[in-house]
Length: 317
Image 1 (tube, rainbow, N blue to C red):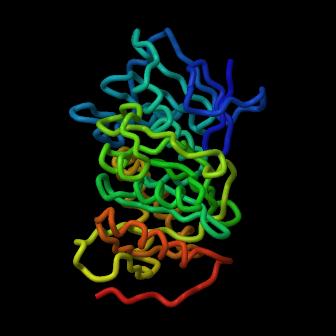
Image 2 (image 1 turned 90 degrees about the horizontal axis):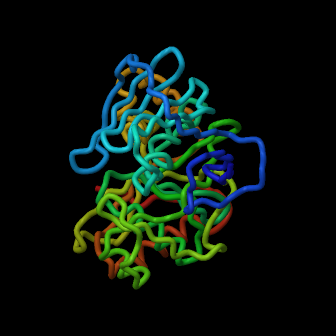
Image 3 (image 1 turned 60 degrees about the vertical axis):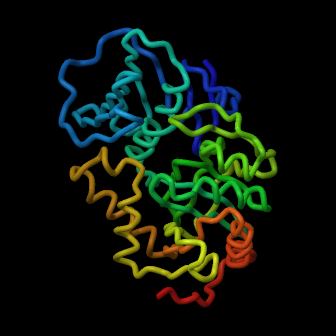
């Protein structure tokens, strides 16, 4: 069965993932197997649920053997307590684009959470001597900004899921390199509007190999995107948050926050506190104006061009 590079590890799977790079046979970090049997009738303790797309929901349960994710459309995925084993119960469904999106999104994020990695919803790019992460709700432009930075000399680490390894100081694991964009953003940045459909957006794989980062990188900064009108002053300003609000902000942007519910909030808080002890978290005001995007990119490049060092912060009102 093929093995694939994913989030700095090896996914051994009986489902094909054409969007991932195949690896030679090696010790897997995660194994994914399709099961023809029916899952246990009792799912376990319900932790939370989240909206996938439209009216499609996913629900998370926890039991003695690990976790269970139940998607309305793609079936049930069971993840072992240590995150290393994944079983898919498709109920007769063939693996398709939606199945792969679910695996590379919430399923692997849950496996990494079980294995002790902190997963955030955002995009990450390497600049200077480390990685910079951008966090925001949907429609705030984090994928657009990450792609613009990669096209301007950075290297894309991943889009949608940021996997943080906290051992020895936070570092970002390389994730999935297809960027999910709306058609207007894709047209302005790449001239391409023909990406694969993914939940209303298109998935664009437009970067060359030297614009992609395929190894872990130390986390140097986290930006919480706060778009402002195009007539609101400078195109980009940042202000560093104090540790407590910074940690709470990271918890609010946890990839699985809605699914994990209150049952595992304490774990997320501890991980977030560990990150902000060494990594600055900024509120980042940026104009929502494509014409000002090059200026925003140049400002970020100036902040992260060289070795990691503290710099003066422009004050926000």
